[in-house]
Length: 322
Image (tube, rainbow, N blue to C red; front, side, top):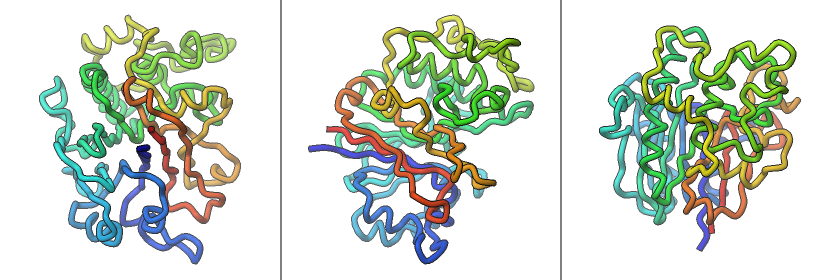
């Protein structure tokens, strides 16, 4: 029996559920119609009680919900919706080194459902030259070893990763090389986890990336955009090791869409004409262990046809597993 998993940053579940116009009734009808058996939600930005009230029609129709609320009210928040039972729920990274910083951040929840382990993650967005970028680098230092220890499971981490791995992952990559989301050490982290597929070597710092004058954000190991962040042993070892030739985690959508020169994108800013002109970013991923990826049959971005039909600035990313 196949299993379809979706991941989507809802940009506030209460806002996503509102009817925006006559043709856009919000996320609730989407939940009725989606082929997904499991939906991983990020940036819920509500208390569990508010989320349950907002999603009451979906819960009444058979969806089950677990949520990790952020201690900072109205911020972050992640959740798992499933048409199956949900067990063994864990919020945060447990006793992982450095994980205590993010225990109440509303950025990680994992559980067992439909026979697999699922995690919904909202990675810090970062902002170059601010403490937010330091937080993002610290989160990566926790995440990398945590996932390395879990690679033997049948597991998917779906979420808003807030990083574009490759140039194909954002429309306007060149002017964004100094921006959080496409900084060298962020991209190198993705290399360290996923390898360089479909490229034979990393794009970070290659001839195209560097251009005539070099990457303006420097090279991996310089941690461009940081303020007070000091790389520890985990970060330094990651930089030194580079990309593995035999990664244990897999970007399901990219693996199934290796030849696409652009995207498929999953996020477009509300501002300007980004959605209409296709100026998107692919920052929403389903990253799976090898055993689960071997079950992946197809993957797609559920992008609506028109700007006015959007109930979030992100589109759901779905993967069907046999």
